[in-house]
Length: 283
Image (cartoon, rainbow, N blue to C red; front, side, top):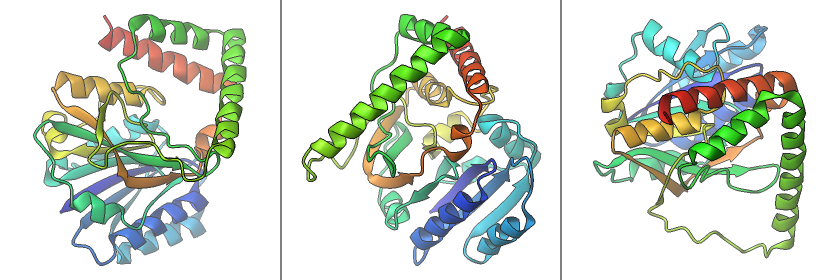
């Protein structure tokens, strides 16, 4: 089984080593042929860390690529074009942040999947190390035009975005309270073979060969945010399903790079992303 991972790093070198180490442990003693395209968008290169990152070449196919910061999907698309990477050579193409780690059984579980012709994307269980919740399923059902339009307007102005931020803080605190007060052995009742959803969380997305045959590039030009809906809408266009599969486990260290982003930039990127989504998929 051939697998490629596009790992995008922005000023997250320490987290990158944890990420690569987890991949090394998971792929060890498997028959997976793995290529990791490590895209370094960092504003300042730390040569000591880069040397450590390159040392993983002895464990799997690691390709270190220094790039200007074009954004999440735009950086990946640039690397695919610039280095003439043929995605159809791989059974799975994975797009990932680096503030994550995969479980030791990840590649074994991936290799055991029997992919039907209708599946285009897998959404793994992304377990938050901070608040103990699963980031997937990101979106169960397709949002309405009205809902996206309201969200777009909330991100349009600074004062409405402030209200949105406060509401989100309250929501996360309530989630944490519910988590700590619920029984420790409580689990979501999801069948191990997965369940169909609308959109996966964008921090770690697994594309099948069926999706790549239809779409071998990621022409989403927005710098950051909205990737989930883009992937969901392209899957709808190709009549392919997005499947949440909790047996595939990834651990999340809470978006290190985006957590350092200034609120006004965060607001602006989200507004641009929603504007693009509405213009291209909700016309």
